[in-house]
Image (cartoon, rainbow, N blue to C red; front, side, top):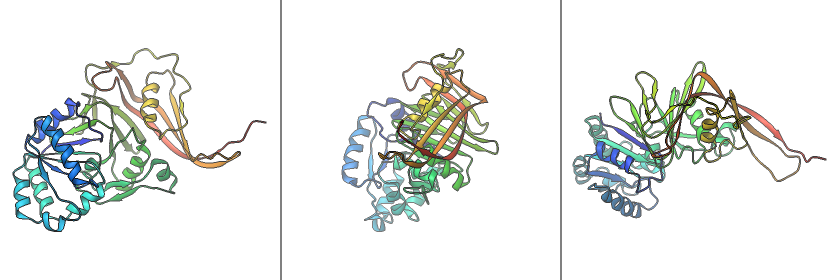
Length: 349
């Protein structure tokens, strides 16, 4: 089996760490699927130039929803796929990938090559499609409240097993929907990959984080939920269930007295989760609170929302290190619980 590389989207040309991992595990002759894009030709033009600049020899696997009935069965396309050392699924709409590829000879061939050692990478929608079921849509607050743009799960490519994945994770505040996706899929582990960041998942050995931001790990056990944030160079050993923090980061010893009474009033806002967790592990406080609710400009409005409680457990650890490359802090196993609330706002008289 080959290595999977899950990129959270918005991969930048100067992200040498992530491109080096893709080149290492997928090889130079990489087949690029632009199937998810609303403009596959433009996506290919952009990605071809990007990958060539990083030392690749990219090949366009030009299957779309519109032409899949022909190209996904074409012997010439299958020969092209067979000639590739690895594959990359570009971003867009993950539903386009599965509509075009599920049940086709090209996907069967790709799965066989992956089983025989070819690397497969994806970014944004390309990452989402790796799971089965895959997250096809939904907003965190709507999903938690069961109304509006709620979680949608659909059949995915199934290259990721017993794991739920999400992308643009911190930038788009998606931990609420990932929790629900894990419950519905019946899995105990979920990963949320943030933008310009990758999780490298070899067949054997620990998974490793590369890139600018974080990969969040959500663990669902009989005792409750825990969340961790891993940064550049940090690893997770699936066999042992252990986090291995890069030696450039050391355990936080002295709490910051300025960090207390921690609360986010919009916990599903961009980077509110990482803001809260990194400050909690620097604080002497034992817990922090996050809120999210449907706002209104009207006086005296009452709305449904959620309250998230983050709390330190005996396993909680915070680590501090250099701010580059990647993030400065790492966070291991903060407990969390979520409950529905009603928020009411009235003017002071």
